[in-house]
Image (tube, rainbow, N blue to C red):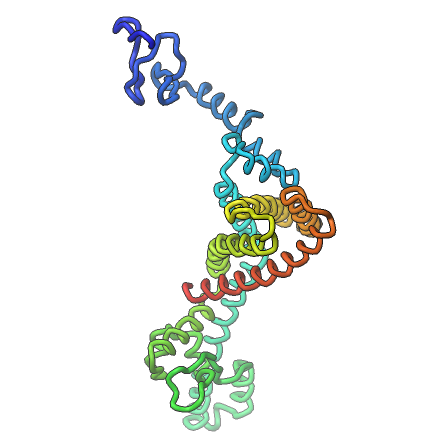
Length: 354
């Protein structure tokens, strides 16, 4: 048993209050560095680089082992967990990086075109509105000044500002309150659809039923506010879709490898590591796509990810190549169905919540 420290020979940790020897650089209880006043700027900078870029740092050690198919999973399941990032943390970081990068790419690629299209639609709506007024004024001039307002001149002006589009348009939605079979929307004026607010449209065209009103309002919002915000909304929902995707893929792994007698959590960890590797590759592909406008890394990442997945299956589940390939084909098919379903639900959720 250690003797208590003499009061004159020790100091107190400013974090947890435990006594420290004068020569101690770190507190033995909480691990905080001995406090000798606020750290200097260069000291803070040095500690930052030492922590982040150290070869013994968990992040670099995790990424290094993640490069080899199945190695990180095998080491984690063997009990070597402390030196590496937790699988869920790694998954969330990689998924957020990928989704964020592709959000920037998608916004940069189609955001400007969406904004220009919305401006064009608004200009067209005002153009049609002024064309209607011009026609009324032209008819009045012909009646009031039949000699001065020559019909051919008025016809030319009307043609110049005339309509290029139909007077009406259909806003399609499922009518759940119709006495007959479900209808697919209502016909509204083009100017109304583009210039009135959703609430004004619902009131003017007397749309009944909260579900019909909700559908119409969402359609009008998408039509009038189709911009980069919808891209961000869809990508935001995709993050949660990916979170839902992992348990589904884990269940597929459990079913395909049911005779291996592995716990669900073991398949779950494997799925998190494989997805993390794929997401990080997609993140790098998005960077290449944004800065260099090429898809070589993106296409190569798909091929590498497919090989990585098959090789990881073999290294973790320890079966022969033929069994591994057959099971990987089954898993690829199930994964594709699950991914399409998740993407569809993410888009629906983004539209519903937009």
